[in-house]
Length: 285
Ligand code: ZN
Image (cartoon, rainbow, N blue to C red; front, top):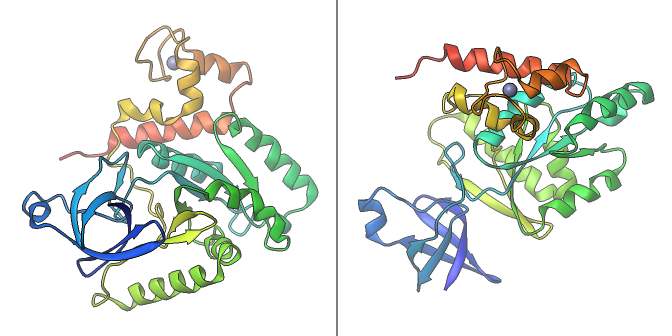
């Protein structure tokens, strides 16, 4: 039989097979090859033994989850103040793992109509590449379209502290919020806590109970691959004079041309430059 690993605690795996949940252990071979199955894996079972892990389409390490379909990237409209720099940094991180990003803007009730209109105008730039959702806990119906994107997928949450993760979880499933709250409290208590990752069933899909991306670390990205993490740049790059254009000082660059013509959000290009510089300065060992 085939199933999906949805939980790992103390070497014991919970595998969802249809409506059934089976407790299973991997056969010894995996340990030998250092290829332990992980949460998110599609596996074949014989009885309560995991026999085979299907090829992964991506693989995260912290938290350890495979086959993530999408990241809900939360950037609050206010408190903390909306930051295009943080948005672009998180988008880059998510793209670098080959995961689809969905932009969620919580707390829209905290800014006035004019500020919201301006934010929407700037974020419209992203809409050809990413779905953007504006939500407020004051109106639970604003979350309905997010619910629809969860179906049939493994999703993780991303965003800085205070971006609205716990409110989102609370709306999606109050039980889940309680669980994640308890886990973070437990982790804060220290070293004796067992590391635990679990996928929760939400709206016909699975949601990871630990944030997929909370730390912004880029040491796995080479600067030459950075342009590939910007889908808007990728769309333009076929018109760049040079095939591997980095969109910086090269002549005949379609990205810089778009910037000059006002077709590219200036902050977007600025954040690209900053990230490029940062990757250049990273010491690699
Ligand atoms: Zn270029």
